[in-house]
Length: 149
Image (cartoon, rainbow, N blue to C red; front, side, top):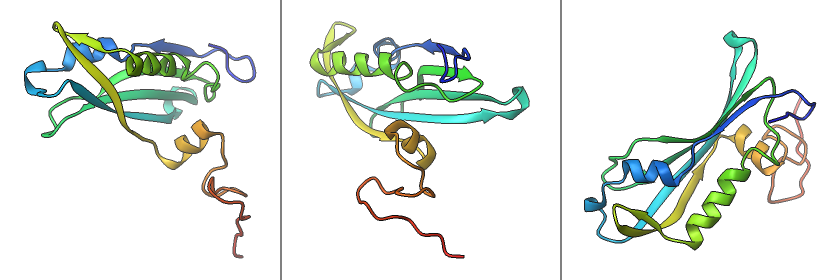
């Protein structure tokens, strides 16, 4: 995967369906619906030569909270990933899973997204907006931010 300035980063896509097939206990789900929570976040690996790592993580939502977080995709490179290829496999698989049922141990389940959890910098990056400290940082209005000095 090439970064914005042509530098190459490493990208691995693990997928959602395979992870759900490995972790879901079908005996616990009375209804044939599985809700998943998605987390997308980036971090700097400063001890590794200033590498950036971005992850897409998933977790089946259930009460009580019994399921573990599973990796969906991981990117590692000298800069943030480009948004055109980074979430592309994830978006395609989510669309397929929401249109079609998934079979887990001969039982069909609907897959639905419960929520996305992202910190402010990751949310701004994914939505292509300014961060919380930037000019026009609010994605819902057009008020210019002012810094008091």
